[in-house]
Length: 221
Image (tube, rainbow, N blue to C red; front, side, top):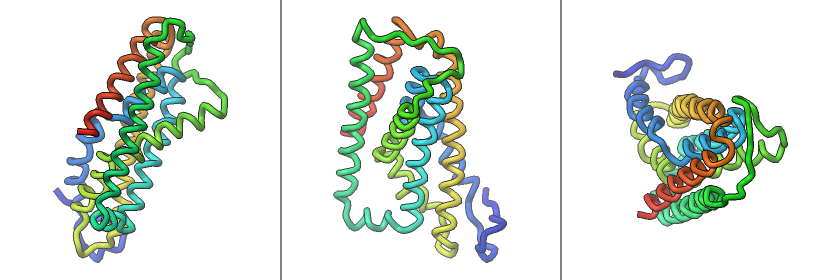
């Protein structure tokens, strides 16, 4: 189902907004690396830590959208080795995150943290770390790059402004993803008091680490 965009000079052309949402929404809802990192950080630092991580992750998506709008996908088609570099960096970062979580999960002396729902560590370095975790997770995710550089352009008709259309579709995707990440952040923050210390915390760290390592293995394959 198509809809006409108002407020953008498309000369009455049609942009398939709802078709794009139909493709993007299932991909957003599918648990991935960014979801795992948002959940991990929200359990460790409360809902706001998860939100900070989500903001960083979706800032990475915005970067991909801007690059798509200004033709970076053409560059990737010309120099496909860039994909190999992106995949390698993504795998290394996921292995690093997963290894950290597994190490904490296997360490009996892991520090206990008791947080009420919504609480977080107020240290500014924690804010920077949370945003950085989300940003690097998404900017090194080849699956997300594939979405922006291959799938998203398929929804832009030849006769419309590519830059404006790409940025609009990026805004729609980021809105969907940020909303879903906020749900995970709230869930993690709510469970922080129960899962934020002792054996439950170690089990969660171990499970998150294994999930991140599994995602890294999937990227390698």
